[in-house]
Length: 381
Ligand SMILES: *Cc1c(COP(=O)(O)O)cnc(C)c1O
Image 1 (cartoon, rainbow, N blue to C red):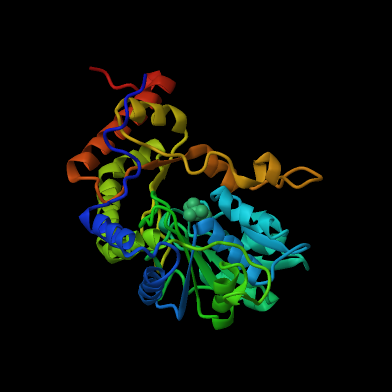
Image 2: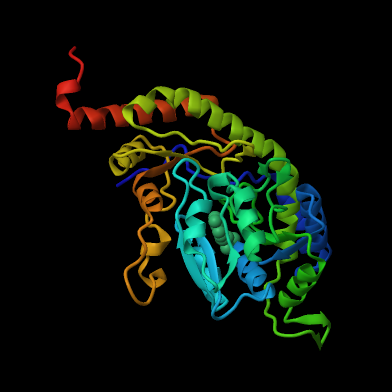
């Protein structure tokens, strides 16, 4: 039997402020979308510097509603990275459109603009880059492609609350951006989602769509569903948003300490996270890449250190996402990443002594593994 990790891979920071906020909503008697959701939206819009923010039930709903309200549907192709969480591709399928997978940049794990160019067709309607692990995708060249080809540009920002690209915050880098507040994300609402946009008409369509297409009670603008966020969830979100800057700084400090503690392992083939020029990384995950990944992960589990593999399979090789006819595309960097990435604990509760413990355990696992493969190089004594 495996003991639970002493340093988990994720740990939401919930305290008495969140408890008080939820209790207050419970006692108010108003549970469904109302003033607390509105206040969560306005503080999130302010944080991102976005003219509009629309709250939805979760990040997947944010993606589905955004694509649909932007008019993406049957016959359309949406280009997205092959290396992401499955929700990115599912949202495209939900709209009746086809996800077209492009490769990633091997350094940053984000959508490679050159690979995007290679899969453009006359059916391409939108680019859907993912700010993976908390690092913005390389948005300038993607925006250039989107402008030249008159494509929509939608950010999957579910892992990147508070990151920036140049002077621009994530959430303001395209036509719309979708955030998630799942418990493992950089901030949580238990479940929750948000769309930020400068497009007032899109914001209005999203507000209607999430509420059965209603302009006002029983006055229907069109088709819609119940994609609303509850007041209870929004209450947690408001408190968590206020804590986000400090939590992000803590993640960045821990990532810097891990970088320093693991620097020597680069000679043994361990690749540390790289941040692209002009970008800030908010370290939703601290992810290394190494050839002997599965054995090292098992060793860390034995040392009671939580790890994660995000993601073990590239999207283009998942059976239901493969093209109906023909072989799946070959996307070498996405495939290599799926085989070699390993995320280590970087959340705000990771302490300095725990950084040391993670680094020591990883070092010993890597050295032990390489000694087994190359016995001749084991130092004597
Ligand atoms: C978490 C996540 C989602 C989905 O968000 P949920 O709130 O879990 O529905 C979508 N895309 C990415 C990249 C994510 O990490």
